[in-house]
Image (tube, rainbow, N blue to C red; front, side, top):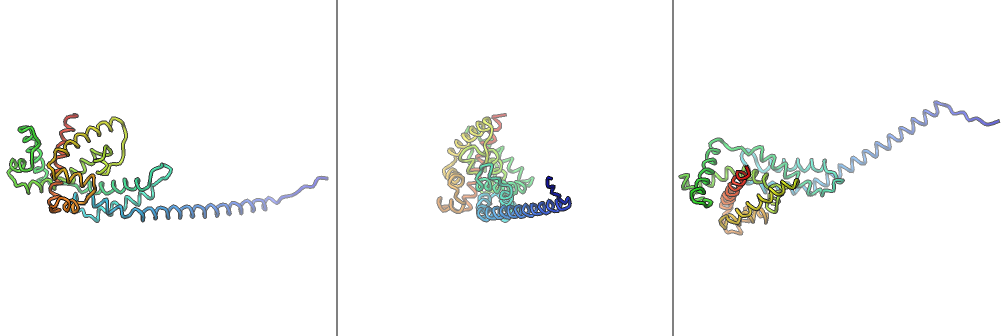
Length: 272
């Protein structure tokens, strides 16, 4: 007679329930361990690249407009770094340092854009300077000097530089947006991505225009642009190299950006 083994249904359920609880416990521990590891990785990434934040902030500190401060840029960049650490996905085969650089830069520029407003009175002055520069070029066939623009505006060159400096943040952001990922100058301005072939062609053309414009700048302006955007020197370091004051470097840098913006405007109008 065959033996029949009886299994108590309630016992079977108790075993199954216990096994499920153990599996849940193991899964929970594994999850917590994974989460702790992830948090530890994020923490280490943030600590490792934290010095990059003020370094990038200093690159745009000259474009600050009240009430924005250097500390505000650092705070925005730090938030960008933290988000980068949380969102980073190694499977995308992107180096975290590169990814974080882009996110920090974007956060800092977004903060700068938020506060880059110009009073109506100053906007009128800037418009007048642009018209004066355009008229001089139409009459002479050459790019106007700062002295020529100041004379036509009936203001001093120092007053003209103050107008340049007031518009500098907007000019910087405009040039930065136009140059994103085109060539060496664009990369110096922290560009990050390159996409459609048509866009690459247009950006390549734009870079050619700007390269020629830079070459045609007066010597000191040209040196400042190269030292700042290619050699990554600070204004203070450039002042030491050129043996002029840091304030003078700032003035000439603002004037050079104005010259570049005029070329951008001409390029955009020619394409329309």
